[in-house]
Image (cartoon, rainbow, N blue to C red; front, side):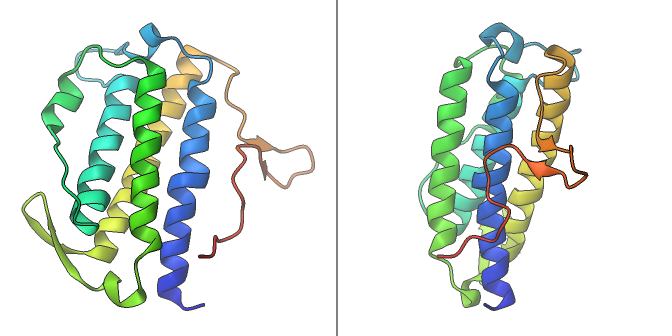
Length: 178
């Protein structure tokens, strides 16, 4: 397998088999009220972050790389003080990541160097994917931190009993293949 396919496969893995299951684990016991709490006015709630992740993935991968229409109001993602319940937010994010996965599954090595314009910026398909993977990772980390603050002891991603840090989130460790 060439490095381009490894990049695509690993990106798909992170988005759908690592980050999404980790988010589901974090939020399994959360209430709708807790997900809209903010530490202060400059902070985002878990609800804001979930809306933002769905909007970002839809704009950058589904629309920007996949060429599908999208409607996004980025400022509203951060301004919201309430909205969909947690189940609806997670369903929307899951569907968005599934659409992004379909886009990524149909890319070739040659597609990665192709140009695209996202948020009025010229970029490449590879750079767009790289941005989305790191962006989802960053906000997943924020949600993990908020989960640890709101529900101490509820996050367990690894079994460290034998020193091997074995994943508990259900994702496969290997690189997915088409």
